[in-house]
Image 1 (cartoon, rainbow, N blue to C red):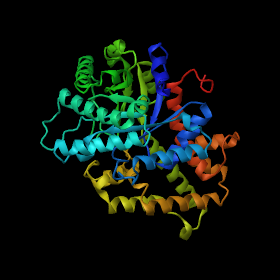
Image 2 (cartoon, rainbow, N blue to C red):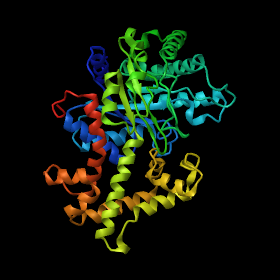
Image 3 (tube, helix red, strand yellow):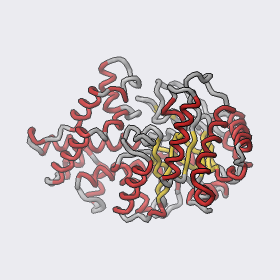
Image 4 (cartoon, rainbow, N blue to C red):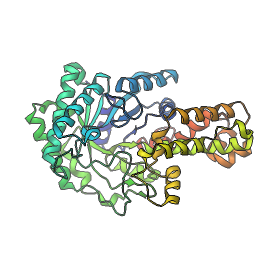
Amino acid sequence: MWSLLDEVVRRQKAGEPSGITSVCSAHPLVIEAAVLQARETGRQVLVEATSNQVDQYGGYTGMRPDDFRDLVYAIATEQGLPLDRVILGGDHLGPNRWRALPPDQAMERAEALVAAYVTAGFTKIHLDCSFPCAGDPTPLTDDVVAERAARLIRVAEDTAGERGAARIRYVIGTEVPTPGGAHETLNELMPTSAQAARATLERHREAFAGHGLEDVWPRVMALVVQPGVEFDHQQVIDYRPERTAELGAVLNEEPTMAFEAHSTDYQLAEALTALVKDHWAVLKVGPGLTFALREALFALAAIEDELVPVGERSRLPEAVEQRMLAEPDHWEGHYPSDDTERRLARRYSYSDRMRYYWPDPEVTEAQERLLGNLAARDIPLSLLSAYLPNQYARVRRGELAAKPRALVIDHIRDVLRDYDRACDPHHKEYS
């Protein structure tokens, strides 16, 4: 059964620089921005939920896979994007959430996780079994990772049934960047070697055969390898094409498979374009989008301070800071020990651990008060120019309304516009 994702790979194999942006976020404003971008360009939208955001128990967002599906579909329907142009993906599905448990117990929960995603209608499934569980050797061997991934694919196939399984496209790979960016300070990052990538393919092919999944191999659409891109709380490792020349040839004998790049957040537009040209057909971005969300909301909070009496202000930045200090589990182990650096990291880190706090009721209330306060007022253009200059220019040209929600969404779309230019450089909007 043909998939929208197949066309991306087909064009790559035909020598065209074709790609697709994978939006890895559960924030409604980010999803709305992605939907509006797809509606305007006429392309499809790929939205992925990660296993820590969304699982069978609710994840940190409180959503199960069917809840996430309903959220994305509702936004798409409200914004007039046909659902046949919406692709749902599951990212880093595996035992990652339950690494403290012994392997058998962790894998049982991972099986239930994959089954929940497939039952909810997710058709792009990334298997990530690269994290050791309690008692596992470190690091895991390719054989163990491939065996566990094949086990989860067997669950997905059995859950979907023959007709449903034909719609699923899989992503495999053992050199998987840490979800949401590196936990440690980065100095140097080497791309995956061609030898390691070939070994990964071979081990997975053998594991597929061991589980009777040989006929599934053509539906493995992508291999995750490290192109040498990453970010931590204060720096970005930029893509250098000259370091991946040998790696780029690894998939020449795989007619239905391209590369998938994780942690492409904050790459410059020219680097994104080079990645697609070098066969990374799927570009995943998550924290970079909520980073842009924070930029826009905090810019509006600064505008609010100029326009709204003190007692009526949302005090959104302060509300987020208070919740992060009260519940530090999502950031404390990721940021430096110096208090000044920590304060800056909580607000401005590339890793954007703040994204875990947007669903908090107190933060949500402050956000809605901010948007409501500014929706009830005319934002002076001179003030808009000071804080959101790109949006100011579009307002001046009559392309955008000077309304707070529209301004936030458009600022997020500035990130997505760079990705679309990289993924479809010949599109009429970007020619």
